[in-house]
View 1: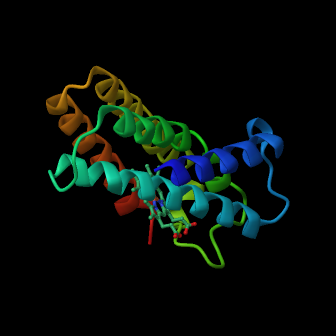
View 2: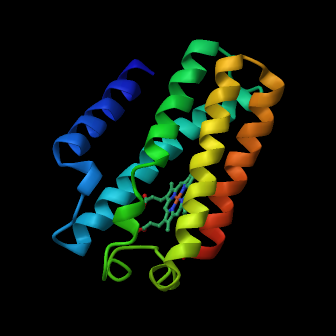
Length: 151
Ligand code: HEC
C-alpha cells in the first residue's frame, strides 16, 4: 500500500508539473498513454477495495480511505486526454464514437467522478454498508462508460 500510494503521488506530482490544468498533448500517442496509465492506477486501487467489499481482505478504515481518496483524485484526471483530437486511432481501445459524442462521454465521466466522491465520503464514515453500496454504484459507472465507449 505504501508503495502504491507513493507511486500514485509521483504520478500526480509529474502531472502537476506538466501542467495538468491545461494539459495539452502534442501527439495523440501521448494522450493515449496518459489516459491508459491513469486507468491502470484506478483499477489497481479499485481491485483492492473490491477484495475488502467481497470479504476477501480485511477492512481497515485508514487504508481503505487511502484507496478512495486516490481513486477520486485519479477520476478527475484523464478526460482531456480522452478528448484529444485524433486519439481514437493507434494503440487504443477508445471507441471513435466518443470523440463525436463529447457531451455524452463527459457526462459518463462526471457520473464516475461523483460516484468516487460518494465512495470517499462513505469511506470517511466507516460504515461498511454504505461503502458497499457506493462501491457498487462506482463499479456500475465504470461499466456504463466501458460498454459504450471502450472497444
Ligand atoms: C467515462 C469513461 C470511463 C470510465 C468512467 C472508466 N473508464 Fe476505464 N477506460 C475507458 C476507455 C475509453 C478505455 C480505453 C482507453 C484507451 O485504450 O485509450 C478505458 C480503459 C481502461 C483500462 C485498460 C487500461 C490499459 O491498460 O490500456 C482499465 C483497466 C480500466 N479502464 C479500468 C476502469 C475502472 C476500474 C473504472 C472504474 C473504477 C473505469 N475504468 C472507469 C473509459 C472509462
